[in-house]
Length: 196
Ligand SMILES: *[C@@H]1O[C@H](CO)[C@@H](O)[C@H](O)[C@H]1NC(C)=O
Ligand SMILES: *[C@@H]1O[C@H](CO)[C@@H](O)[C@H](O)[C@H]1NC(C)=O
Image (cartoon, rainbow, N blue to C red):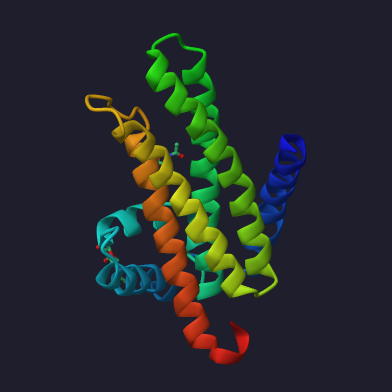
């Protein structure tokens, strides 16, 4: 099961490299920078999860995020979340064998490892749904990915005094998921009820 989801994952990574630059990449222009700025502003105003600066610093440095449309920007946000969830998955694996954690924390880390593994495949499926313009399905999967982060975090909070070694990662993923959700919602609104 793992193998197939990671196979799909690598497939999508290659896919993005090929597709995004060709379809959506445009040189940095005032207009495209505006899109990142205005989208981040619109989304941060509505969100109680992330702020404008987090959105901007996440989306701005990615060259392909200088895209001229909302669809490209939504893909970038999901791609960032995918990179995050994948990196965290591998760092949990390292933590599990580091010998640095007590049995309780190790138990939590094992749960998080499974959650993040599922998160990777859910995100890949969400991107697939998005590419097929099934925005509702993409949203449901994205919300489930955000849930992954909070469930992992809660595991550590169940025992007093346990500090979650993944607090930053969980929070990053949660925020990136919310950014992607917001952009997809803007996109659905822009396209009207027929397309969602
Ligand atoms: C976008 O936001 C950044 C940071 O706030 C700012 O430096 C830049 O001038 C803004 N660009 C536009 C076109 O508004
Ligand atoms: C996850 O995303 C955040 C926000 O864009 C970024 O600062 C961080 O470096 C990323 N972490 C990983 C492990 O990819």
